[in-house]
Length: 304
Image (cartoon, rainbow, N blue to C red):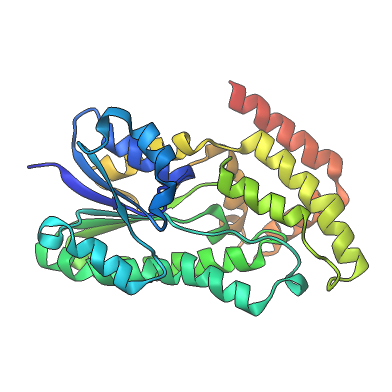
């Protein structure tokens, strides 16, 4: 069997770039990577990271996940339109009080994070069905499992992604098509850095005084502590994604960060939802010492 063609979106930086490079440098040369991005003017970092694999096991193409014509044009440019593995990674973030976010901005986020995925799958799924094989890999998030303070809209988009894929996976399996949701926790990338930089400049005039205080004095400092304690690199997530794609029986869901798993496990431990709700509420608003101690313990485990 020849190399499998992998189409990866959102490769100008971060996780998408790292995944494309990791697959292109696969030790057994099992993949031919089509690394895509919306703006080819931002291809420099990918070209540099790709090194010797550029134009050998990795080629760069333009693809805008928010444009059906762009997706179709990219897929049509591939020999026999064949995509063996789709890695849907392109996405945008949003944090802050709900009152301070416009409906238009929320729609834009869903257009990328959710409908971008749907457009991609609509384009490649019929061909995968005809060839009776394929693997749809979607970069989701632990926030597609469990909501997080001031991440209401972003988390909602990832919940939508999870529901879409879980439903589609049943039908896809009938055609020998695998589906995997890769669920990173905190990842230290330019994507995350920009989200937090924007948050620090956010106009909170629409929020009440107490909500603004919670965002500034509790949420932002806590988030920075979480990233320092639990944050993965894009390369770590790429390595986990490589393992999923090369697995004989890939899972439907794969969390990349073992240290974050106790937090998501709370949701499954109590069907009523009270346990994770009470735990997060107390950690954030009642027991700062417990929160800091927990992160300290996780930092120690990570070093070991």
